[in-house]
Length: 330
Image (cartoon, rainbow, N blue to C red):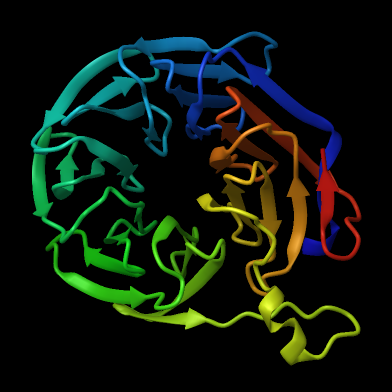
Protein backbone atom coordinates (compact mmCIF):
# COMPACT_ATOMS: atom_id res chain seq x y z
CA UNK A 1 0.00 0.00 0.00
CA UNK A 2 1.02 3.64 -0.28
CA UNK A 3 1.38 3.99 3.46
CA UNK A 4 3.90 1.14 3.56
CA UNK A 5 6.24 2.68 0.99
CA UNK A 6 9.45 4.32 2.17
CA UNK A 7 13.01 4.88 0.94
CA UNK A 8 15.72 2.76 2.51
CA UNK A 9 17.43 4.94 5.12
CA UNK A 10 20.76 3.35 4.27
CA UNK A 11 20.45 3.69 0.52
CA UNK A 12 20.71 7.38 -0.38
CA UNK A 13 23.64 7.74 -2.79
CA UNK A 14 25.25 11.17 -3.23
CA UNK A 15 26.84 11.78 -6.64
CA UNK A 16 29.59 14.40 -6.81
CA UNK A 17 31.55 15.63 -9.80
CA UNK A 18 29.85 18.77 -11.06
CA UNK A 19 31.50 22.06 -10.13
CA UNK A 20 28.35 24.20 -10.14
CA UNK A 21 24.58 23.91 -9.83
CA UNK A 22 23.23 20.63 -11.22
CA UNK A 23 20.34 21.97 -13.27
CA UNK A 24 18.59 18.78 -14.33
CA UNK A 25 18.58 15.00 -13.83
CA UNK A 26 17.00 12.18 -15.87
CA UNK A 27 16.84 8.40 -15.86
CA UNK A 28 17.32 7.82 -19.63
CA UNK A 29 15.10 4.80 -20.15
CA UNK A 30 16.94 2.67 -17.58
CA UNK A 31 17.03 2.52 -13.78
CA UNK A 32 20.80 1.94 -13.66
CA UNK A 33 21.94 5.13 -15.37
CA UNK A 34 21.52 8.87 -14.93
CA UNK A 35 22.12 11.89 -17.14
CA UNK A 36 22.74 15.29 -15.54
CA UNK A 37 23.32 18.83 -16.77
CA UNK A 38 25.07 21.64 -14.92
CA UNK A 39 25.89 25.32 -14.96
CA UNK A 40 29.55 24.23 -15.06
CA UNK A 41 28.95 23.62 -18.78
CA UNK A 42 28.94 19.84 -18.66
CA UNK A 43 26.51 17.06 -19.41
CA UNK A 44 27.35 13.86 -17.52
CA UNK A 45 26.23 10.25 -17.57
CA UNK A 46 26.41 8.14 -14.41
CA UNK A 47 26.50 4.37 -14.08
CA UNK A 48 24.78 3.78 -10.74
CA UNK A 49 26.52 0.42 -10.39
CA UNK A 50 29.94 2.08 -10.32
CA UNK A 51 31.34 4.36 -7.64
CA UNK A 52 32.99 7.00 -9.81
CA UNK A 53 32.16 10.43 -11.28
CA UNK A 54 29.97 10.57 -14.33
CA UNK A 55 31.42 10.82 -17.82
CA UNK A 56 31.28 14.32 -19.34
CA UNK A 57 29.55 14.68 -22.73
CA UNK A 58 29.71 18.41 -23.41
CA UNK A 59 31.61 21.42 -22.19
CA UNK A 60 30.47 24.68 -23.74
CA UNK A 61 28.47 27.36 -21.89
CA UNK A 62 26.23 26.64 -18.89
CA UNK A 63 23.64 23.90 -19.41
CA UNK A 64 20.54 24.98 -17.52
CA UNK A 65 18.11 22.28 -18.65
CA UNK A 66 18.06 18.86 -20.27
CA UNK A 67 15.65 16.42 -21.88
CA UNK A 68 16.18 12.73 -22.67
CA UNK A 69 14.27 10.55 -25.10
CA UNK A 70 12.22 7.78 -23.45
CA UNK A 71 14.44 5.04 -24.90
CA UNK A 72 17.57 6.73 -23.54
CA UNK A 73 19.26 7.13 -26.93
CA UNK A 74 19.09 10.93 -27.26
CA UNK A 75 19.59 14.03 -25.14
CA UNK A 76 18.57 17.59 -26.00
CA UNK A 77 20.03 20.76 -24.46
CA UNK A 78 19.64 24.47 -25.29
CA UNK A 79 22.51 26.21 -27.05
CA UNK A 80 21.39 29.82 -27.27
CA UNK A 81 18.67 30.02 -29.89
CA UNK A 82 19.44 26.49 -31.06
CA UNK A 83 18.89 23.02 -29.61
CA UNK A 84 21.76 20.53 -29.56
CA UNK A 85 20.78 16.89 -30.10
CA UNK A 86 23.28 14.41 -28.66
CA UNK A 87 23.64 10.64 -28.91
CA UNK A 88 23.91 9.13 -25.44
CA UNK A 89 25.06 5.85 -26.97
CA UNK A 90 28.26 7.12 -28.61
CA UNK A 91 28.52 10.43 -26.73
CA UNK A 92 28.60 12.88 -29.62
CA UNK A 93 26.54 15.65 -31.20
CA UNK A 94 24.21 14.50 -33.96
CA UNK A 95 22.72 17.78 -35.16
CA UNK A 96 21.21 21.10 -34.07
CA UNK A 97 17.74 22.57 -34.49
CA UNK A 98 17.50 26.26 -35.39
CA UNK A 99 14.37 28.38 -35.61
CA UNK A 100 13.77 30.18 -32.34
CA UNK A 101 14.42 33.92 -32.29
CA UNK A 102 15.30 33.92 -28.59
CA UNK A 103 17.11 31.83 -25.98
CA UNK A 104 15.61 28.35 -25.68
CA UNK A 105 14.43 27.84 -22.08
CA UNK A 106 12.85 24.39 -21.71
CA UNK A 107 12.48 21.16 -23.71
CA UNK A 108 10.38 17.99 -23.65
CA UNK A 109 10.52 14.83 -25.76
CA UNK A 110 7.38 13.20 -27.06
CA UNK A 111 6.63 9.71 -25.67
CA UNK A 112 8.06 7.93 -28.71
CA UNK A 113 11.18 10.09 -28.90
CA UNK A 114 10.49 11.25 -32.46
CA UNK A 115 9.27 14.72 -31.55
CA UNK A 116 10.71 17.47 -29.39
CA UNK A 117 8.82 20.40 -27.86
CA UNK A 118 10.82 23.55 -27.09
CA UNK A 119 9.96 26.86 -25.49
CA UNK A 120 11.70 30.22 -25.72
CA UNK A 121 10.68 33.82 -25.10
CA UNK A 122 9.25 33.85 -28.64
CA UNK A 123 6.91 30.90 -28.00
CA UNK A 124 6.68 27.16 -28.62
CA UNK A 125 8.15 25.03 -31.40
CA UNK A 126 7.44 21.39 -32.18
CA UNK A 127 10.15 19.51 -34.08
CA UNK A 128 10.24 16.29 -36.10
CA UNK A 129 13.58 14.75 -35.12
CA UNK A 130 13.67 12.20 -37.92
CA UNK A 131 13.30 14.92 -40.55
CA UNK A 132 15.17 17.49 -38.40
CA UNK A 133 12.64 20.22 -39.08
CA UNK A 134 10.11 22.45 -37.35
CA UNK A 135 6.54 21.23 -37.83
CA UNK A 136 4.60 23.59 -35.55
CA UNK A 137 5.06 27.14 -34.28
CA UNK A 138 2.93 28.71 -31.53
CA UNK A 139 3.68 32.31 -30.50
CA UNK A 140 2.66 33.01 -26.89
CA UNK A 141 1.64 36.31 -25.31
CA UNK A 142 4.14 37.70 -22.79
CA UNK A 143 6.03 34.42 -22.81
CA UNK A 144 8.68 33.88 -20.15
CA UNK A 145 9.85 30.33 -20.75
CA UNK A 146 7.63 28.59 -18.20
CA UNK A 147 7.15 24.81 -17.84
CA UNK A 148 6.01 22.49 -20.60
CA UNK A 149 4.96 18.83 -20.65
CA UNK A 150 4.11 16.29 -23.34
CA UNK A 151 1.04 14.13 -22.82
CA UNK A 152 2.10 10.44 -22.62
CA UNK A 153 -0.25 9.62 -25.49
CA UNK A 154 1.75 11.95 -27.71
CA UNK A 155 -1.37 13.68 -29.00
CA UNK A 156 -1.16 16.82 -26.84
CA UNK A 157 1.18 19.04 -24.84
CA UNK A 158 0.79 21.66 -22.12
CA UNK A 159 2.46 24.93 -21.14
CA UNK A 160 2.13 26.97 -17.93
CA UNK A 161 2.14 30.77 -17.69
CA UNK A 162 2.67 33.65 -15.26
CA UNK A 163 -1.05 34.42 -15.01
CA UNK A 164 -1.95 30.97 -13.69
CA UNK A 165 -3.16 29.57 -17.00
CA UNK A 166 -2.24 26.14 -18.30
CA UNK A 167 -2.96 25.74 -21.99
CA UNK A 168 -3.18 22.36 -23.70
CA UNK A 169 -2.76 22.02 -27.46
CA UNK A 170 -3.35 19.17 -29.89
CA UNK A 171 0.07 18.09 -31.12
CA UNK A 172 -0.89 17.32 -34.73
CA UNK A 173 -2.85 20.44 -35.61
CA UNK A 174 -1.67 22.94 -33.00
CA UNK A 175 -5.25 23.80 -32.06
CA UNK A 176 -5.94 24.91 -28.49
CA UNK A 177 -7.77 22.03 -26.79
CA UNK A 178 -8.22 23.43 -23.27
CA UNK A 179 -7.29 26.32 -20.98
CA UNK A 180 -7.04 25.56 -17.28
CA UNK A 181 -6.95 28.42 -14.78
CA UNK A 182 -5.46 28.45 -11.29
CA UNK A 183 -6.97 31.85 -10.49
CA UNK A 184 -5.63 32.13 -6.94
CA UNK A 185 -2.24 30.46 -7.25
CA UNK A 186 -0.38 32.87 -9.54
CA UNK A 187 2.45 31.71 -11.83
CA UNK A 188 2.81 28.07 -12.85
CA UNK A 189 6.30 26.74 -12.03
CA UNK A 190 6.15 23.01 -12.81
CA UNK A 191 3.97 20.61 -14.80
CA UNK A 192 3.73 16.81 -14.98
CA UNK A 193 1.25 14.50 -16.67
CA UNK A 194 0.48 11.18 -14.99
CA UNK A 195 1.67 8.17 -16.97
CA UNK A 196 -1.93 7.19 -17.63
CA UNK A 197 -2.49 10.64 -19.11
CA UNK A 198 -5.61 11.19 -17.02
CA UNK A 199 -4.10 13.72 -14.61
CA UNK A 200 -2.00 16.85 -14.80
CA UNK A 201 -0.12 18.20 -11.77
CA UNK A 202 1.00 21.82 -11.51
CA UNK A 203 2.74 23.97 -8.89
CA UNK A 204 2.09 27.64 -8.25
CA UNK A 205 3.30 30.76 -6.41
CA UNK A 206 1.63 29.58 -3.20
CA UNK A 207 4.02 26.60 -2.89
CA UNK A 208 1.01 24.40 -3.67
CA UNK A 209 0.34 21.48 -5.98
CA UNK A 210 -2.88 21.54 -8.01
CA UNK A 211 -4.28 18.50 -9.81
CA UNK A 212 -6.43 18.45 -12.93
CA UNK A 213 -8.28 15.38 -14.23
CA UNK A 214 -9.25 14.68 -17.83
CA UNK A 215 -12.92 13.69 -18.12
CA UNK A 216 -12.99 13.58 -21.93
CA UNK A 217 -10.78 14.80 -24.82
CA UNK A 218 -10.26 18.52 -24.22
CA UNK A 219 -12.30 18.41 -20.99
CA UNK A 220 -10.37 18.81 -17.73
CA UNK A 221 -11.58 19.60 -14.22
CA UNK A 222 -9.70 20.62 -11.13
CA UNK A 223 -9.46 17.85 -8.52
CA UNK A 224 -10.37 18.98 -5.03
CA UNK A 225 -8.42 16.83 -2.60
CA UNK A 226 -8.51 16.98 1.19
CA UNK A 227 -6.19 14.84 3.27
CA UNK A 228 -8.06 13.16 6.10
CA UNK A 229 -6.05 13.34 9.30
CA UNK A 230 -7.15 11.17 12.21
CA UNK A 231 -9.06 13.15 14.83
CA UNK A 232 -9.83 16.13 12.57
CA UNK A 233 -13.05 17.12 10.88
CA UNK A 234 -13.16 17.19 7.09
CA UNK A 235 -13.43 21.00 6.87
CA UNK A 236 -10.41 21.42 9.15
CA UNK A 237 -8.21 19.09 7.09
CA UNK A 238 -9.06 20.43 3.65
CA UNK A 239 -6.17 22.89 3.63
CA UNK A 240 -3.62 20.17 4.45
CA UNK A 241 -3.65 18.52 1.00
CA UNK A 242 -0.25 18.93 -0.71
CA UNK A 243 0.86 21.35 2.01
CA UNK A 244 4.40 21.31 3.39
CA UNK A 245 6.89 23.00 1.09
CA UNK A 246 8.26 26.32 2.30
CA UNK A 247 9.27 27.70 -1.09
CA UNK A 248 8.67 27.31 -4.82
CA UNK A 249 8.15 23.82 -6.23
CA UNK A 250 10.30 23.68 -9.36
CA UNK A 251 9.86 20.04 -10.39
CA UNK A 252 7.10 17.38 -10.32
CA UNK A 253 7.04 13.71 -11.31
CA UNK A 254 4.60 10.82 -11.03
CA UNK A 255 5.84 7.34 -10.20
CA UNK A 256 5.56 4.84 -13.09
CA UNK A 257 2.42 3.33 -11.52
CA UNK A 258 0.97 6.81 -10.78
CA UNK A 259 0.55 5.91 -7.10
CA UNK A 260 3.00 8.55 -5.89
CA UNK A 261 3.66 12.15 -6.82
CA UNK A 262 7.09 13.63 -6.05
CA UNK A 263 7.96 17.33 -5.78
CA UNK A 264 11.30 19.13 -5.59
CA UNK A 265 11.54 22.61 -4.10
CA UNK A 266 13.85 25.54 -3.56
CA UNK A 267 13.31 24.85 0.18
CA UNK A 268 15.99 22.12 -0.34
CA UNK A 269 13.58 19.19 0.14
CA UNK A 270 11.99 16.46 -1.93
CA UNK A 271 8.51 15.38 -0.86
CA UNK A 272 6.44 12.33 -1.75
CA UNK A 273 2.65 12.61 -1.84
CA UNK A 274 -0.42 10.41 -2.16
CA UNK A 275 -1.88 11.81 -5.42
CA UNK A 276 -5.47 10.93 -4.52
CA UNK A 277 -5.61 12.45 -1.03
CA UNK A 278 -2.75 14.96 -1.09
CA UNK A 279 -1.29 13.26 1.98
CA UNK A 280 2.41 13.83 2.63
CA UNK A 281 4.07 10.41 2.76
CA UNK A 282 7.74 11.40 3.00
CA UNK A 283 10.10 14.33 3.29
CA UNK A 284 13.55 13.63 1.87
CA UNK A 285 16.23 15.94 3.26
CA UNK A 286 19.94 16.20 2.64
CA UNK A 287 20.45 18.79 -0.07
CA UNK A 288 22.11 21.98 1.14
CA UNK A 289 20.58 24.22 -1.52
CA UNK A 290 17.57 24.38 -3.85
CA UNK A 291 16.35 21.19 -5.52
CA UNK A 292 16.32 21.95 -9.24
CA UNK A 293 14.97 18.73 -10.75
CA UNK A 294 13.64 15.27 -9.87
CA UNK A 295 13.21 12.03 -11.78
CA UNK A 296 11.63 8.65 -11.06
CA UNK A 297 13.42 5.53 -12.31
CA UNK A 298 11.46 3.40 -14.81
CA UNK A 299 11.20 0.54 -12.28
CA UNK A 300 9.83 2.93 -9.64
CA UNK A 301 12.50 1.96 -7.11
CA UNK A 302 14.64 5.10 -7.23
CA UNK A 303 14.13 8.86 -7.05
CA UNK A 304 16.93 11.11 -8.27
CA UNK A 305 17.17 14.79 -7.28
CA UNK A 306 19.58 17.46 -8.55
CA UNK A 307 20.49 20.58 -6.63
CA UNK A 308 22.22 23.94 -6.58
CA UNK A 309 24.57 22.38 -3.99
CA UNK A 310 26.43 20.75 -6.96
CA UNK A 311 25.23 17.23 -6.10
CA UNK A 312 22.74 14.59 -7.18
CA UNK A 313 21.04 12.34 -4.65
CA UNK A 314 19.58 8.94 -5.54
CA UNK A 315 17.04 7.58 -3.08
CA UNK A 316 16.47 3.82 -3.21
CA UNK A 317 13.13 2.46 -2.02
CA UNK A 318 11.94 -0.56 -0.08
CA UNK A 319 8.81 -1.49 1.96
CA UNK A 320 8.71 0.10 5.42
CA UNK A 321 6.28 1.83 7.77
CA UNK A 322 6.43 5.64 7.57
CA UNK A 323 3.94 6.47 10.31
CA UNK A 324 1.46 9.38 10.36
CA UNK A 325 2.15 12.41 8.22
CA UNK A 326 5.05 10.86 6.32
CA UNK A 327 8.60 10.25 7.49
CA UNK A 328 11.44 12.74 7.41
CA UNK A 329 14.71 11.42 6.01
CA UNK A 330 18.16 13.01 6.16
